[in-house]
Image 1 (spheres, rainbow, N blue to C red):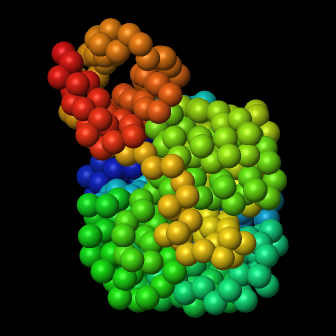
Image 2 (cartoon, rainbow, N blue to C red):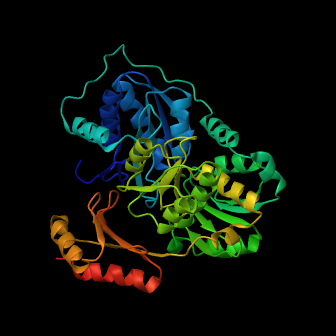
Length: 445
């Protein structure tokens, strides 16, 4: 596995360098052995390299005895919906999520339609590394199944839990940047069904990124003016595999990814109070959304699979991650920007307010995200130094080190998707958040 990035979400690497067709085929074979015989869905985001890798993935699955169905270019949450709808034993989504264009990867799904937990991923990794992969005999190659319209099934599930008539009567107008990723077609279909007028750019799922794919402020400087010019009530931005959603208000001001989950939680908990789960690096804005309805908010380790594990344990009605990922169990166990859009549009409808006006009602916190290159063998020493520097804070070692106070926190952890260590801090003011981060950076061994 040298050179590949391996995490609870799957694998990713640079195509032709760390991620080759040989790697993809072998990894798919290892996963196929884990699943056993049965139907496995294979999908891609819009990246051109997905067209090449999916053939290797299907071949690897076939070699292990799995029947495959190529569902085409689909969002990652749509893969989860398709697996449960078609009663497949699993799925592989070929995507590098928010990584830049040279990257691609594989997200592994179980029969429950969720990204496999880390324990399963570790077994697959060990199988990949072994020399004992089983190859099917000459007469055991399964036939490929005919593709199903999993996008339609995904839209139907969202519409079934949404007040379509009320939203359609509101006359909302929105701007959507799909940035050449997998989300353009389904966003178009969903918003049309909701009676929402949508101005889309980058809607063709061809992997042609007009800006860096991670939907953060520094990558979206060109989008704000377009949102303002479009004279809309809200702006939505998707990442390439469409499992994250960033927001702009009607003035073209970037609201960020953190408010996505906070607003979606407000919308859902107003409908049905219940527990909420977020990860260790998610803004206090989401925690406050749960507090608005006197509901508990639990924190898991970072990683979609970890959030889902805790959601199931706590019986959560909503959850997700502060990177713009909304998880609604009614739709599936995957971060889903499309139910996020529907929940936010529903809240706008009930409150008769634009997205910007709703955002003003959420207590403002300032989150600062930084990253450093450091020797991971020195992490424990660093954690000890930081804990000693902040003796008045509550510490949590569930995932790296998190130190928290009533209205601020700092979280230090090695990234699951990049060879760096993340330093994330939040406080009432930007200056205080930056100060917390800088203090931690000065303590690096």
